[in-house]
Image 1 (spheres, rainbow, N blue to C red):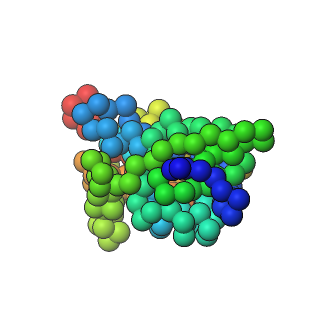
Image 2: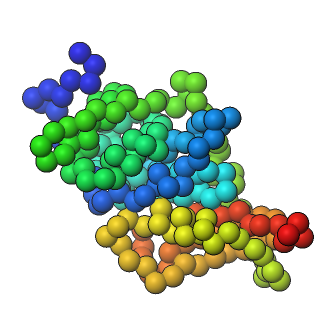
Length: 196
């Protein structure tokens, strides 16, 4: 039976309480893939096309979980929210993720990338490091910045601020936490001031 949790199945714990990556995902019927979080063996990615968060998979999940998972899976934002809200352990078996709570467990089907959904090439969005510029004036949405900050940090992490790298008035702004070494990075798209 698909998704059966057998006696020999290892419980693969998350390393920390998961960050609120579901906040970054879109509600876009034309682009349903960005209502999902991409989990690869190297990175966990969420975007709504205005902001983007990338975390290292090894900082969030155990080695056993990463070894057992397919190369690239898509988890719907509502499922990630369920993972975030009070789960203690997460197990993966093929395309089923089991979320274990104190008194019960819930199964969630995940999508293997390429089965009807392909995640955007998020790596191409990050500007080339050498192309930074001193901005004269660049606008961004403070509500999107707040959401980005919440999604980049796990609840147990504290941070006193973020660094910003600017690449031009109409280029993505790269955002990183400055107080912690969690290798998370994000992007916020600027607001075109000439249109305001």
